Image (cartoon, rainbow, N blue to C red; front, top):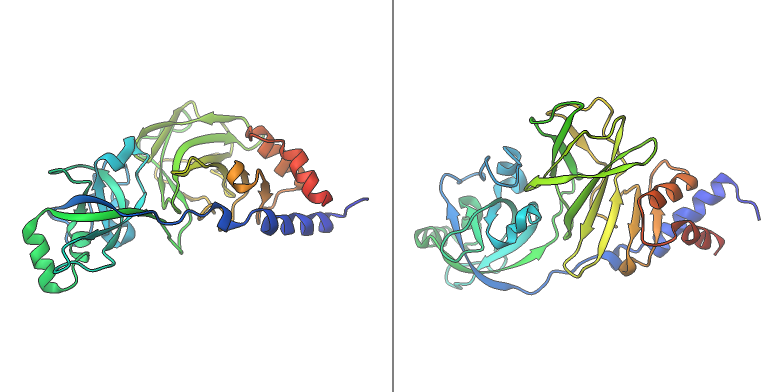
Length: 309
């Protein structure tokens, strides 16, 4: 049976919502873990601009300044951009909700997991008097858990680092990491032939490469969950050929599995599916991109089976 282009688009659109269910990929908040937290000085309204995640001034104001430095949770930079709900445990001073913070730096104090901005530290208190009490203690007992990062007005974004030297050296930092998974690997791909190069994590959220691919470029990011589930994602938007240091590029992508992504090549938890989601790509391009990106399944047969059904 022959399919028209409109028929194929309709069927693929149906597949997106029938086989890629965001709930299948979602991660619920886990149990609280007991620890301790401190705060760093000169951080009444924002965080540090020199954090080890490489965010610069962006790291001082992300999440309205509710940020923290982490010790073990920094995880050699993989933990940068992760979000945590943190609440102190003294019922006299502390609220039930606590505060949600973003990891923007590395640091530790006396057996602490977090060194928070003063703004975030105060947010754990249930009253103005309680704020004064918490600040006077300096270090308090807390409990924390990983939660989903959500930036409704922003997609995952990259900024070309000032150390970049077109066309010989490319470095960029990832902003607005969303959801509850880590970005554990990044590849840079030529959009013409889909040849990809694995980037180095220089430190924090900064990824670098010598001799970057030429032409317009596409990113490929590996999102990894605590349960071992992994997902390669190819953003919709590209990096233009004549990129330059200081440039900021919106990838067009928010939370994987919940907003507009170009191609998702998923592992078992999400049913071994590849989907075209709100992208201006033909079926052939969808198949080609997932195939070249070395998905762990036969995407061509998978898509054809879905279309036939």
